[in-house]
Each structure stands twice: as structure tokens, then as C-alpha cells.
Length: 378
Image (cartoon, rainbow, N blue to C red; front, side):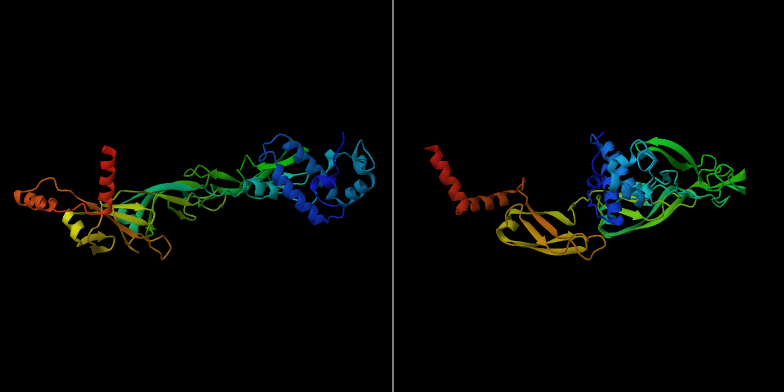
């Protein structure tokens, strides 16, 4: 089978340094790892770059490859071994897999090389809760007591899982055991968590009955949480390290708080701005007026100019909602809603009738409309 030039596979020159070769391999391994790249041929490409690195990262093999090419390693060629015998030098595939998948791939070894650990520390899981707030609580900030069930260190055994501690006989205290697996690179040794001690490296003469040997016990807690001003339903509050306790001394997870906010009878919220519909009479709209209106911080007088039209928006700068963890505030908009009366007494009707007999349609909007009506009638 014809193989590509190994330097071409890694995209480096024949004078590339060891560090340049390693960098190229790491980049390509992340790109073509079969667990990430599902395109056809990705697995073969991953194997190809692995073979290329296995040769070029080893000074002796690289020297033979530069002299004899692929023939140096085929059918027990000049090197006396085949590709299946290659190891990956000083590069740690654990690091590459951790970069790809965010950890949890400890213990891959090539050619018998393994990476040991005396104890498998697993971070605790996160907890997500939803807190209900009134409109005012969300806008002004508040304190809330939250009741949650959290995995905590067992108080009886102090998180050890038992008593009369001994070294695990299965893993010798390492917390991990080796097993051999077949992969796209051939056979390799893989580490896995010891099934006997769960990765702690210890066994106990007596297991803790409170936590059944896990070292973790669920406990109900009440946390007092400070809700900052201005949160909305798109906000999320994180309490670092307040989640479930990790295993074998691993760090605790986090608590993530989402919010469910009730509506206000008058104010409507749009991000950090608020809108208030202000009802006024026809005479207020015609003659203008000053009207007392509510805001988030008390009442203010709103100046309504003569001739104000329906749905006019009057801006009150900085009277909106505070942006969380910031000094900025949104604006408030008073939306004018002219209310047409449906019940009038005799005097009111007489006044309006006298007003109607005057020329109220002396404006450009009326003139343009009436002009088109007459033209359409013709």
C-alpha cells in the first residue's frame, strides 16, 4: 500500500524541530479524532497522523525514515519492527483527549506506557434551581432563602466511606487498574477506575452504614442568596462550589439559579427599559396638562404638551431598571392613551356639540383625507 510522506501528513518540513512536529500532531489529532470528527475517512486520517508522529517524534526512527522511507518499517525492514510496535514518545494523549472532551480520559498508554493516579477525584455535579420573584424583587434586588438537597460529606465517617482503612489489594492503592484494548492504533493499555475501591485506593474493614461506603450523604440545606438588582428571566446566578460534593476529595459542583418573575399590573418590561400606559382625557390631550405618574422610585409629574396624540411615547431617561453588576440604568417610557368617554351628561354633550360646530378639521391630515374622499366619490 502506498503511504503518504510523513512530513506531508503532518504538514511540516523535513527540517522541522521536535516541538514543531509535536505541535502539528496535537493540532491534527484534535481535528480528526473519531469521537469528534464523524466525516468519512476521519478515523483513517487519525491513524495516519498517529503513525507519522510515532516515527518522526523518535530520533532513531526519524533517521531511518529519512534514509529508507517507509521501507524502513515494513516487513521487518531496516528498523526490525512494524508500525504496530510504535509508541508515542513523550507526548501524552491524555492531554489531547482532555483538550477535546474536557477531561475524564486519564490513563491512555501507548507501547506499554501508562499514566497512573493514586486516587480518582471526580468533581461533584451541578444543581439547577428556579426561584420565583415578584416584579419588584427582580427590579430592586432582594434576599431569598432557598431550600435544596445537596450531596455533602458524610458526617459519620468524615467522607472516608468507612473505618479501619487499608490499602486496596486490587489496585495496590493506585485507584486505577490496567486493561488491554484494541484501538485504531493496535493494542494499547488503558487505565480504568478500580472496581473494588471505586478509585479511592483504599478498602475498609467496616463500611459506613450512613453513606453506604460512598463518603457522601444527601442533606437538606437552606441557603440565603442575595439577588442583585435588575435580574430578568434570561439572567442566571451561579453559586460556585455550593453544589454536590465531589467523590474522593473532588471539588464540589456549582448551583445555578434561574428566575421566574411575575408580571406587574402597570409596568411592562423590555430588557432594562419599562413602559407605562398613561390614561388621559380628550381635554388633557387638547389643552395639555401635568399628570402624576408612578415610577420604580416613587411618583413624578409628567408634562403633557397641548395637542398630544394618542400613543405618544414620553421618555424619562434613567428611570428604568438597573443593569445587574453595573451602574447603568434603562429608561422609562410613558405611553399616552387618550380615553374617549362613553357616558356624558347633558352639559358635557352641549359643550362638545358647540365645539364640533367649530372648524376642528383645519389640519393637514384632515384636509388630505377629505380631498381623497371627494376625489374617490367622483
